[in-house]
Length: 80
Picture 1 (cartoon, rainbow, N blue to C red):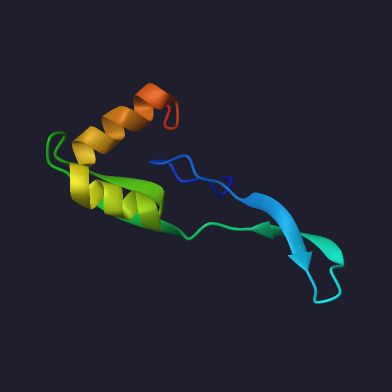
Picture 2 (cartoon, one colour; picture 1 turned 90 degrees about the vertical axis):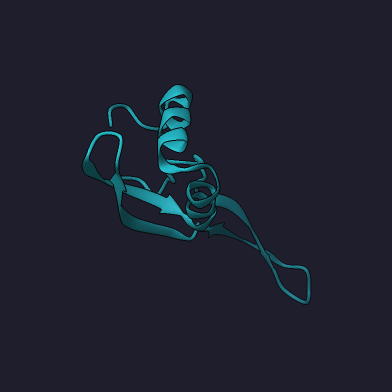
């Protein structure tokens, strides 16, 4: 599976390493991604998600059910 957050949709970005002499070399900025198990009380089961640090904060703020519903509507998760 690619390194994409299933809650926020964040993925790696491409940019440049810029040296003191202003030479530019391509690099990628990877995201802070975790594999976490969440208990989903509405379905009475565990769900395993690839979640970024920002996604973890969103789940803590809005709740797992609201975040999963939003991710399905945006097309980030096919079936939960």
